[in-house]
Image 1 (cartoon, rainbow, N blue to C red):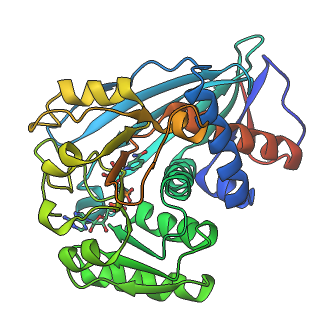
Image 2: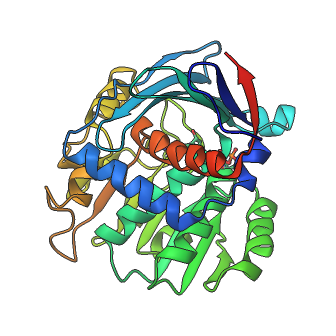
Length: 330
Ligand SMILES: NC(=O)c1ccc[n+]([C@@H]2O[C@H](COP(=O)([O-])OP(=O)(O)OC[C@H]3O[C@@H](n4cnc5c(N)ncnc54)[C@H](O)[C@@H]3O)[C@@H](O)[C@H]2O)c1
């Protein structure tokens, strides 16, 4: 397939075409790192997510972003329907992403964003885990779905000090399948956790990708959490006892603006924690992360469009180089 002609056509990439480009986890980490550092330095444009809610428990988000230094601009249109997997055998999160040419504004690539979302989210967790908790030996993962699987892959490959990853899902067979499927591919021992309490108490670094619900599920209790741990939720703290972010010595979020939006929407009924820094500021060494071994750190990464655009750029470049996808007339 030939290269696209600016203003005349754009490239469409299906989910399988995106996957088949063969973009490595190392590339995703590099792109996401760059995007976070730009974000930390406030060199970006990214309005807080606007959304619509056809049902009480679902959301659609519009996620535009522009990163001048990386010369990337576009928007992701994503949904989260928590009941999809069980009721419709469809993913909880799907969406599309449109990249545009910075100079002329014309659309260049429209892509399925499932792979990209599944990749950039654990990339953020792992980059932050490395920064906030170097030397961790045990990583605990709550939720063994799309995000849980990718978190395990990224953590196993890029958190060098890990000796074990413990996975917990409310459906034990889902966690067992994750371990059986991924163990042959990774060098770290994978194990199914038998209870939330056990996993919280055993692991120094913990992440969760379960459900985002307005009323906290509060399944991981504050009394199980101890000094020195690092907790990196991807599901807006709803899995965790609301007291945990409030008692954290350091509370970091990827975007204060996004955080405030969710506070306004009522996702933090116990009150908002005091934000010490944004993830990008810590990664860019503009603000401290962990300053002592006994600090309890919570780093909630809500998900940022700057990270999406950075990974989409890698996809766009690979697709151009490989002539992948379908050219559609504008
Ligand atoms: N922060 C971000 O950038 C970001 C990006 C994508 C998805 N997410 C969020 O991550 C979460 C997971 O997304 P996904 O695509 O992996 O969904 P998924 O449906 O594929 O997986 C979710 C898993 O969590 C398990 N689970 C649900 N409730 C649980 C509980 N109480 N205890 C233990 N396990 C439980 C489910 O059984 C399932 O296996 C969602 O809440 C989604 O909104 C966040």
